[in-house]
Length: 230
Image (cartoon, rainbow, N blue to C red; front, side, top):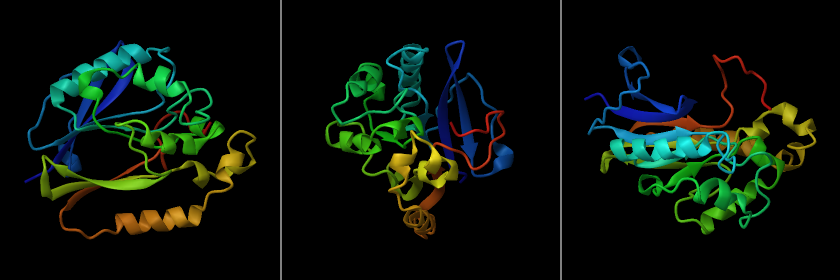
């Protein structure tokens, strides 16, 4: 059996979302389309990033469509790929941005499941650990550390799981150490420890793991026009 993942990427294109089903055989990948098809054998989730804008810049409209889409495909969880709070992250777990950019925006019932965030460079401008601390306050915000991993069973089947490593790419970017805004919060990070953790995590030989996915804010390679990290 070919295992599938249905990933829903919300893009601000005329207020629409595009869906893509990815199989373990790249030749069978399906081109992104506006037509949503729920596969009962798939693990369904939404992946998004660069969103915390206090409701501006189409955030509310995208959130509304996310709720519709998550309901249609019965999304199991949401992944946030960083830059969770513009323009300069949050200063504490009590920062009002959590309310005005997150809690008051993603209100649809289908978006009340677990959110798994990673940190972006804008999140590093203030206090990155405040987002970790918020996990102790919010029921759905699941960020136990600056980098972490979790296994997700496909439709509750413990013999068929997806391993996702959520990494912190910011301290892995040399240019950030001399940056006045990012530097103070990357200098205290042990990049060697994170790299060893990534290697150990991805070396997991559990036969139940059918997929291994790495989630981070900055890609190793990009086919896009934007190649700068800031």
